[in-house]
Length: 265
Ligand SMILES: Nc1ncnc2c1ncn2[C@@H]1O[C@H](COP(=O)(O)OP(=O)(O)OP(=O)(O)O)[C@@H](O)[C@H]1O
Ligand SMILES: [Mg+2]
Image (cartoon, rainbow, N blue to C red; front, side, top):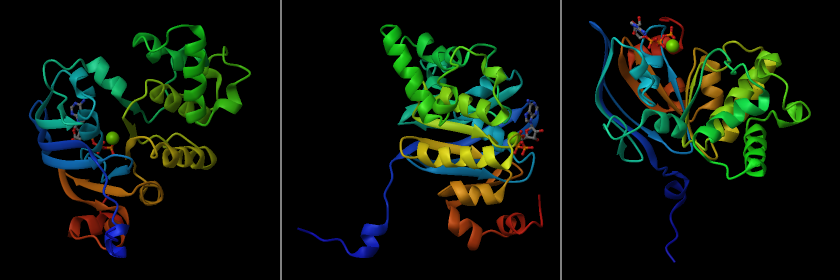
């Protein structure tokens, strides 16, 4: 049998989950994303970093068509997830958002019980045959959100009554309940204290086993801790994209270097 040399064996080849080509985004006359092409891998955490206003959230929102909800926003170019053009007219954005889940900066549980927060998506998408089925889906999602032990005795209490860090993990549980393939997170820890942040970071690392995770963060320490790939944006351009360790230790572009050493931002 062919035995690959070490160097070859050590290079992990991951499937491409998201392929974006020539993406442009405009808000009215503002050109917010300029000809961005990137390929995002499966079972990988990809961090989007860059100064405020550089377009991180805008580009992230292109990946599940959240920009559709902003009237003045226009998206051009080609974005494929698992080789399917997500801007094709036949694609239902609601179905797409079940497949490409999103977690926001501020924990935003619905004003419903913990149980109903998580059951919401599976109910809309008819994922459960009966109550037992739904109970199992909810339990599994809360376990994946690393919050099951803290809430299992009060599933019918309001989600809004949890602490900030618990609410954010509940929102992650809600996002994974529909069995998404991609999880988008826009600064998911910025409202959390260091302990809750560490819990969410640990969870992100576990989620990577099953999903492609894309996280926007202002914390370079966080990007270095949780991601394997990093994309650096500047003034709407994707300046540099590659292996996280390399971006942080040996950036190829002066703008990336200036940002990671704290000279721009
Ligand atoms: N809803 C909107 N309407 C008009 N312009 C917008 C809108 N959202 C973003 N923009 C503009 O698009 C550009 C990119 O903004 P975006 O929010 O994507 O940046 P960001 O990198 O996420 O910044 P931050 O780190 O501050 O969150 C900015 O110039 C911003 O002013
Ligand atoms: Mg943003």
